Image 1 (cartoon, helix red, strand yellow):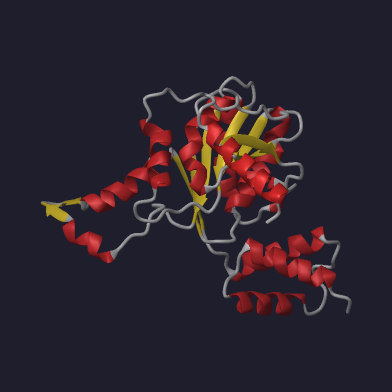
Image 2 (spheres, one colour):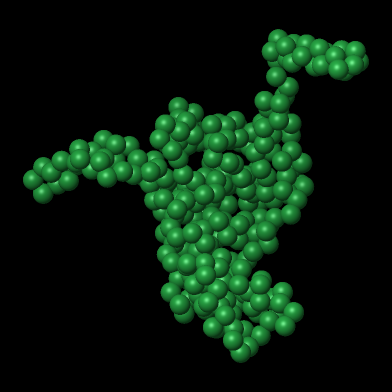
Length: 286
C-alpha cells in the first residue's frame, strides 16, 4: 500500500470514530413531487425515503378472478384517503394470485387523490416509528407496504410490527396505514407440537400459548383479505386478458393447449403464470 493510500485509510478511520461524537444529521427530506411511491433506505446508519421513479402501472381492471378482494381493498383505501376510519390490511393466500399487484393497482387508482406508498423490507420494520414520524406532518395519505411478509422464530421485526399495529404508547397518526402480503395467514411458522398444549374446557377450545402468540399478530390487522388458486377456466380467462394486452389474438389456434401446458410446467395456475405465458407467447417469432 502506498503512503498516500495508507494516509487516506487512516483519515477515513478517524472520521468514522469522530462520527459518534457528533449529533446525527437531520433526516433528508425527500422530493415529495418526484414520485407517488417511495422506498425506505438506510445509508451510513441514517434512514431516508427514496422516490421510486417508475411505478408499475397496473390497473384494477387488469386483475381477474379477485373481484371480492378488489372491492374490499378499494373500499378500505377510499375510506382512508377521505379521512374516514380505515383498517390495516393483511392480504394472504396462494402465491401469484394478485396480492401485491392489487396494492400497486390501488396506488395507481388513488394517487391523484393524494395516496402515497412507502415500501419497507421486512428487516427494516424496526424503523416503523421513524417512518411514521417522518410523514406525520404531511397532507398525503401513506400506505406502508411490506411484501411477502413472514417471520422466523425470534425475529425482532415481528415484535416491531406488533407494536406498530396496536401496542405503542404513541398515538397512531391518521395518515398512515400498513398493508402487508403473505403466503402465511399467521405470518409465523407453525409446528405440530405446539398443539400439544391446547386444552378442552367443556365445549370450548383453549389454544396453547404458542399458538395464541402467533395468531395475535395477524389479528392486529383489522382487515384480512384471502386469495385462492385459480381453476382452469379462471386461468384461461386471465391468459386471454393478457394476450389482448400484448395485442395478440386470444383465440389463436394452440393458445389454450399451450397455456395449459405452460401452467403444468409451473405446477400451478395463477394470474402471474398467465401473465408470464402471455409475455412468452407475444415474444415468439413463429
